[in-house]
Length: 281
Ligand code: MG
Ligand code: MG
Image (cartoon, rainbow, N blue to C red):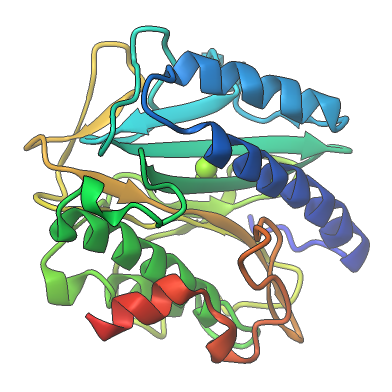
């Protein structure tokens, strides 16, 4: 069952989204060689709680941490650990959620360790940097497709169109989702498929759009910890996610960070530089 939110509920979700956005800004500064993913998690829990919010993931189906931290060939749901110490050139995917007044925000980023601000591009091969940028472009293409009156699979097709020319593996077992009082609500939001299908997007629908593109196969495996999802061939993976409200004025990116447009997204020229860069390739 798809639950649409009232404008008042969307406003609360925007507060939850802001907590997650601010958290990602703090973590982006903390991501550097020598930092463990457990240290990132400790920072995250402190930050979320200091803002009067509650971590979405901690305790969710038994997940033990505030963040999912997935490195390199890990796609999603990695568990923070003192034993996982970041090295220059690693891809660290940080997925975070926060609850404010009963409503969730959910957002994920992929930072290149040693180049989280794009000012030290030499730490990874161009092919790796392009995977990260193009996955982010996939996210924003999906965001731009989340307009009232469109169909759900228009989002899916827009995302996938960013992967197909580059033969990336588009992860199919893990997809985006509705979000609200529950972290995962209907509908599923696949990152692949033909446009023009599925439910019509109406104002008040709030979706977490979250492409995962791999440099190799789309196939995944789950590690013995029962959480960490990895690429079956060990190739690198990137993941970006925003929580987006469909409004009559355009998509409202509830988890937008300071360098990203939030709302309304009527003007495609306002999408981030990452999208432009990926388009140019
Ligand atoms: Mg997430
Ligand atoms: Mg999500």
